[in-house]
Image (tube, rainbow, N blue to C red; front, side, top):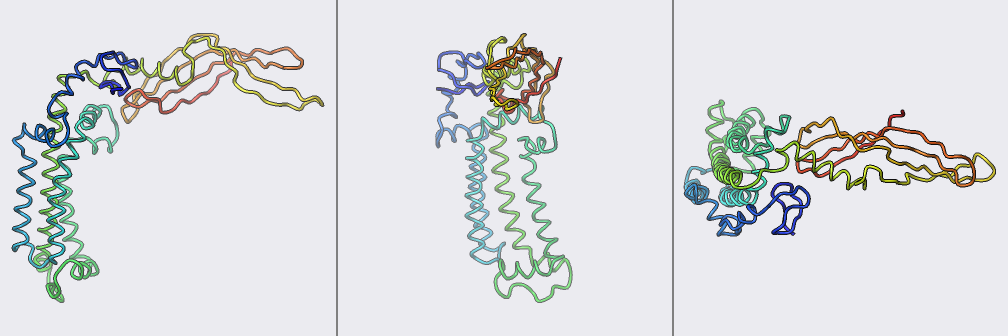
Length: 338
C-alpha cells in the first residue's frame, strides 16, 4: 500500500485514495524524481540546485577546524580541540542529511505555518529556524563570556576543565582581560556553532526550495481545503462511531437493579430518530479541525421481566477533534433533554 500525498491515507497505486478520493498519479510520477531515490544519489540531486553549497560548507568547516588546531584555539586542551573538530564536521553532515530526509515534513510545516496559532508555532516555522540558529550561537557565546565574568566558580571550572594547566591567570584585573583570556574557547564555540548552523540553514533552504517545486506539481494537502477536510472528518467520525447510517440501532448498556426482592435486568436502548447535523466548524491551534454533530435519539428503558418501556427523546451532541490530516483525535459526547 502507498501513502496518499493529500490525506496520508493508504491507497492502492493506480487507484484513487479511498479516504479522500484523490488521484495520486502525479505523486506516483513525482517519485521518479532523482531526489526521491534516497542515498547518496538522492542527496547529490538535492544539493545540486545550490551548487552543492552545504557540502562546500562542510569541507570549509574541516579547513577552519585545522586552522583552529594550528593556533587560534591555543590554550584549550587538545582533547577538547579534537572533539570540537569531530563534532563540527559530523554536525554539518548530520544537519544536511536531517533536512534531506525531512524534506516532505518541511513542506507540510511551511503550509501549516499560516494556519497554526501561538508563539511556539511561529518558532517551529522552517524560515524562522533558518534564521534562529546563527542567532542562538551568538547568544551562547555572549552567555559564556558573561558567565565567566560574573561567576568566579564558572571561571574556575572552565579553567580546570577546558584550558591547559597554567593558562588561566590567578586574578585577571578587568573585564577586558577576562574576555582575552577566554577568547580561544569563545572562538572554538563560535566556530563550531556558526558552521553547523550555516550548514543546517543552507540545507533547510534547499528543502524549502524543493517543497515549492512539489507545491507546483502535486495536489495540495488536505488541511488547506476546509470543505474537503470537513468531509473526511465526518466520514472518519461515522466509521469510528460505527454510524454510517443515521438510523442505526444500538444497545447502550445493561445494568442490574435490586429495588424488588426479584432482581430485574434493565437495559437501555437508543434509536437515532433523525439524520446527523454538523455545525460549528473551527480550526484548532495546530491546524486541525473541531466540529460538532447533533442527532436526536429515542431512548427506551426495557424491562426484561415486567413493566412497559418508557421512551424519552434526547439530543446527543458530539464534539469531534481531528488533526490537520483529518485523523480523529478525540470525540466527546453530551446530551440535552427535550
